[in-house]
Length: 198
Image 1 (cartoon, one colour):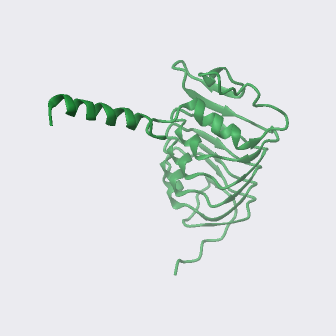
Image 2: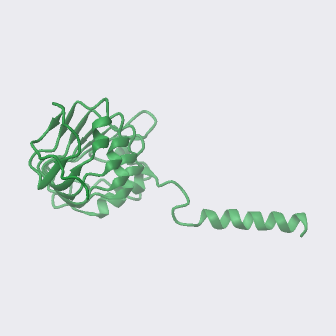
Image 3: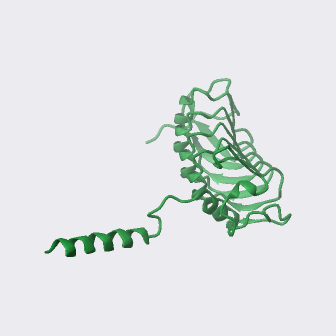
């Protein structure tokens, strides 16, 4: 095989790899648009979330830092229904996710455990169901976690107890949660200890 042929093969492989879906990191705009598409928005609060605009920093309910990275997502009492999406886990600079008092349902994506910069997550007063992902133990900057008043069930993962920065974690008024560990005053809720696994 000649050198020229080898170069052409390498170029073709590089170009084809660039066309494979998911071969590039998801942009913040694409992540937020994926979330918007999963929602029903009767009050049209997301009308400024326009996929034709490359920078979501101008969108309502979104805040950014000086590097134009999304650091805040605020959708409080907006009558939104639908689901959280795994794509939200790609908002790597997100510091605050406050989306309480909506009608968001379904499971919590494990990918939200990728939000390493997150300080505040408040998803209270929605209709979230299923279990709390153990990946939340990766949120080592988290200070406030509000998951109260949902339909969550199963074990509250012991990994959450290892978040040293956590000041408030509210799990009260859910469907059927239980503890895998002895709770501290940080954790709000009155639940039984989980039965031992067989």
